[in-house]
Amino acid sequence: ADRAWWSCAFLFPPEDQRLHDVLMFFSFSRMSALFRWSALRWSLLFIALGILLSHLAWSTWYDRLPPSPRNHFFHFAWEDYIALTEPRRPGEVLLVVVANSQGYGWEVESEAIYTRIAERLFTERGLPVRVVNWSIPGARYNDVIVALTEARRLNPSILIMSLSPHTVTDPGKNTDRLSEWSTHLYHRLNDPSIRVALPPDVMADMTDWRMDVERWFGRVWPMWRNRSLPSALLAEQPVLRPFFERGHAGIWFRFPEWRTRTAVPREENQGHPVVDIPRAEVLLDVAVAAAPSVVWINMPFRRDQQMAVQAGWAALVPLCEARDVVPLDWSAAIPDEGFVTGAHLNRDGHRLFAEKLIGWLP
View 1 (cartoon, helix red, strand yellow):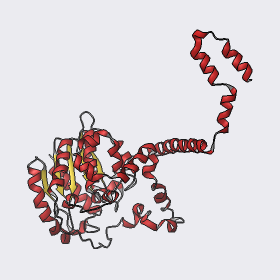
View 2 (tube, helix red, strand yellow; view 1 turned 180 degrees about the vertical axis):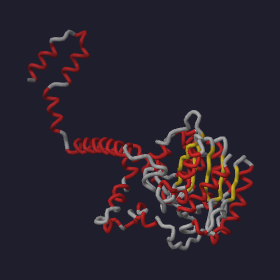
View 3 (spheres, one colour; view 1 turned 135 degrees about the horizontal axis):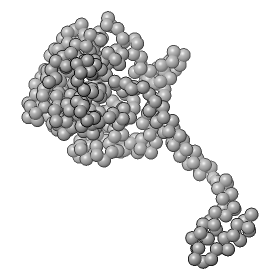
View 4 (cartoon, helix red, strand yellow; view 1 turned 90 degrees about the vertical axis):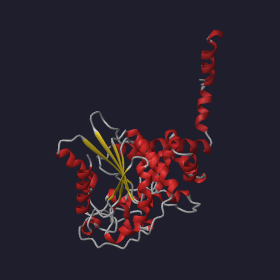
């Protein structure tokens, strides 16, 4: 077979040298050598196919998930949830809410959270308003500032931050940069448009070499970002749950146990936040660049938690006013009956928050 192939190759005149070289390269003996690869080559091929097929499987599965007024997976897949949020449509008023676990509302069904209620109330009044809920459970400064940077792409009409002053406190000396994130949104730092929007000193505080390695893996293998999600999903199965208790992998998804108006409030000590002024200024500057109208709501707290945040809020108000950001102190806006914990709302609390939001917006 090789001799016949070589004969065909030599039939071509010199001016067809490239075609001649191609035929010479793909001889039967050379092609058959591919099947005698070393273990290393086969391993690399297996890894490449695994990356490709796992990404294809994840994308296909995620794209078929039903629409949700909040991220499907609590701490996971925030990059995908944010990336797939549609920008403002023609003739539409778009409200983007960046909040924490209070806005995520894991204690209630997704249809009962205040962003979803507010959107329904707007619809009932015949107003073309869409409310995007980017409420990140346990949101830290880094998560929030990346979400605010991403909000520019949506071209929102109004950007609402419902956060406490704790968001902009000094985290102190911490050598573990990963612990300063509640999500995997640090993978969005691979996007040049995100990096350009953030000051260099902020970028330096966000990452280190270990995070750079983590981001590189996330870029090469998208499923790497959500590698812990399968175990958390399996932990929701009663038979498998005992095997996944370590690290509380499953508790993030156990909504039914919290869906009650009579839940016993657990003790929460918010402490007295000391605002880091430079961090607050950077966060506000990023927010102002994302929308023509920005509102910062001092998020509601139960009565025994309200005084702890007042000093921090007093420091934030002049920073907001200097940038035409509307500061709203709603720390006492919800009665104690509307809370499950010191800061988490029950159904009544979400309804009251939505009604107050609707009543304030022009």
